Amino acid sequence: QVHLVESGGGLVQAGGSLRLSCAASGSIKSISSLGWYRQAPGKQRESVASITSGGTTNYANSVKGRFTISRANAENTMYLQMSTLKPEDTAVYYCTAKAWVGVRFHDYWGQGTQVTVSS
Image 1 (tube, rainbow, N blue to C red):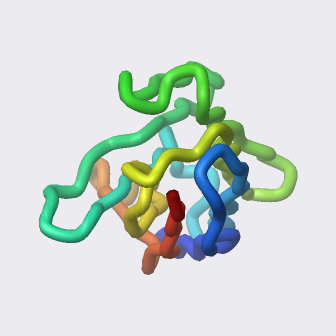
Image 2 (cartoon, one colour):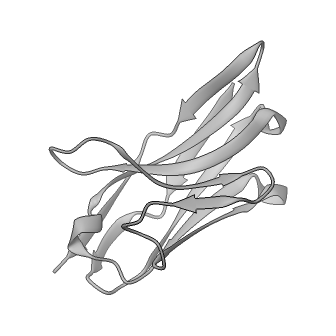
Image 3 (tube, helix red, strand yellow):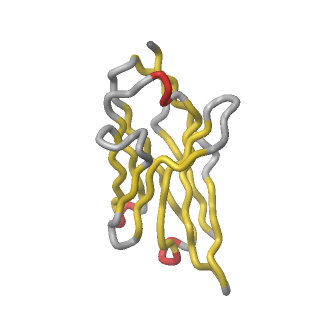
């Protein structure tokens, strides 16, 4: 089992910055990749960014150049640095982890943290 807890959300003006954190606990060594998803009101949940255990990153086109995903393995924590925020970035942001548990991969999710960008 992997337990994820997000923090760092809040209200920010357009053009501002926020840093989200995701603290992982439990079967940490089984985690192969981590990522961030978001869900805006009335929209489907979408992938924002991901990072593998080897450090390979991937971003949605809508956030490339503005968001940076990173992980601090010694702290069992993942971050999402968000800059030049836009009102359309407003959403609940979820931390996710893919971990090998038992005989297959499992997906784990945090409870989410609200990010609101005012125009």
